[in-house]
Image (cartoon, rainbow, N blue to C red; front, side, top):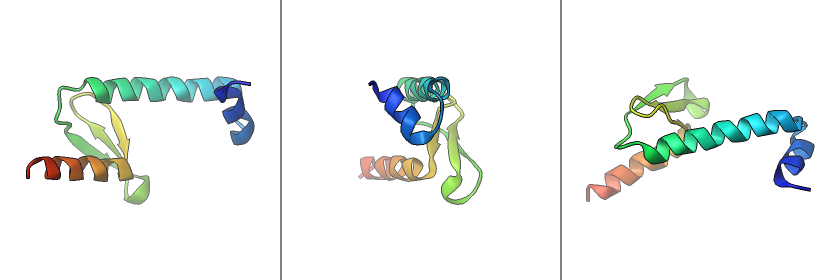
Length: 78
């Protein structure tokens, strides 16, 4: 049994849906990784469900990921 089969069983999603999500994750990670940076994020939504989209690469972060990215930039300035 591969990882996608396990994810399908525990999530209730069919394998096709799991594969579609996985492909979106890979594309997003590639965008973020290859961005010339620093990222220029715009907030979409509110609270913990907010996402942040980079104007340069169109990569997306969840709220908690964005917090750590911004802290990393602040620490890098010291």
